[in-house]
Length: 430
Image 1 (tube, helix red, strand yellow):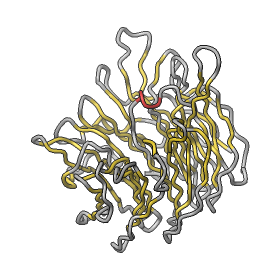
Image 2 (cartoon, rainbow, N blue to C red):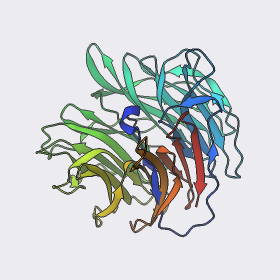
Image 3 (spheres, rainbow, N blue to C red):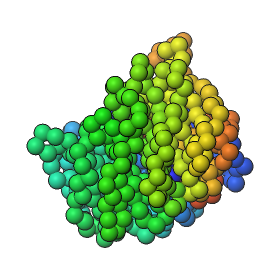
Image 4 (cartoon, rainbow, N blue to C red):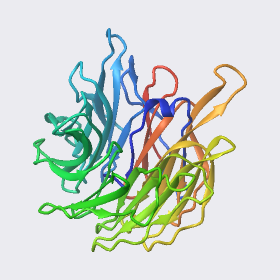
């Protein structure tokens, strides 16, 4: 997992929304021109993903169907966007005719990557070399079905860990499994009882994973090393949540201190919370991130730098319109001031090693003529002190942006074109 965590959501939830990102640090270079990622004549879905390695090479992943074919079956596809500005060939990871959705990707320090996705009610995965070539066949990761909500993180040295939830004998379980550098599998690791909610995963610079998921009426987490799996730690025992928990995210610093954010349905409205779980096992009391008066929306985003400082952005309703709100959370647990960021939805965040970051999101812009709105994509930088910069529009025709960072202040953004045929596009900057 990179310095940000992303959760998959339905295509319908994003329809007709605009994309925006903001930046507050000094630009080290100009923005590149936006380029097409997916193939001409293919229709893509609004679930693209991006993972950037330590050299600045980016693996781009998405699903799309060939419009020239009878049924336009969706395929999971990838290509590498190299730091020098060139792009590799498009690679198709999934077989023809399979039902595929919700790819997730992550990379090691040198660009070897893992991609996981849902395929025919199972969770599968495949390794990608730094050059963009495929490593080994598609591997079935799940042990029962239906299985859903895959996430993946890759250690600096290249070992990938996927996590998901699956149904066994009528009950949900959270499960994890290694997908090794050569494309072979480790044994499945049953984490414990779970739910239909998507889990979250992170990894530190020593290769220790943190996985968090919803178990019944609580959020729990485990640490996994090369030789051990910890007992489950309940993160939410002190929070009353009559509506349950969901939308779990994980951020991990260089040494393994973790921040886990999530929504609760306690009281008369949803809230955004964060729990800090140190590498030594100490659990701090949960922190309310949103205001108690916020009418919190569906989405939020979390990113954590190598020192353990985080930024959290969430949505809330204001006069029936969604707006974005953000704040910093220090490694010591100090909550920064709340910043209202204007109308928007589907936020994603990335921080570099030192905490300089970027927020991306999309927003619907109403018009007086048919179709009475358009969707734009923009970017906004975030300083390491948690100050949000001014908005830069990336395109007036884009939605569901995702972002990842190099070690130092340069970002790659990917999004879906809002209008037909939904081409996947990308830009790097600033």
